[in-house]
Image (cartoon, rainbow, N blue to C red; front, side, top):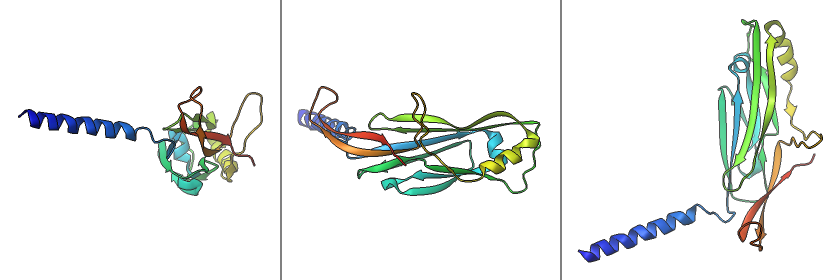
Length: 187
């Protein structure tokens, strides 16, 4: 009987040791989450076509038709690119304004799981747009929008990050091992 309990205890300890090691990936992979949040008014007026960086930094095109849109990308080779370089608003065929005012809002957030990186901003944040002006405004926005870094005092607005995997020998800053660096992509 003691032997069964002893064997079971060893198996439990081995399972705990193995699963605790999988949480630290030593810089072998990076999980990125891209999150968009759109107002219902914006979705009533248009669909949103987005181009985001998929696995390996490859451009992937998708269409947003829901208030919350989220993509998770896992990269395991570096350097790579993460982010969302382009989007455009596609007016729904036959749309006619039925409200006096529209709130046209689209918020972008991106974060990584294994190592802290987090940024976000408003792509569109227009409140109380008169109904009779919505189509003319969105017609201008329907052209493809490339997101470029905009210089400004103390602000960084870059939609693409270049991610590198680097080795750290020092234990002063972060634990010894691999870590990721994030740099704004320059155009």
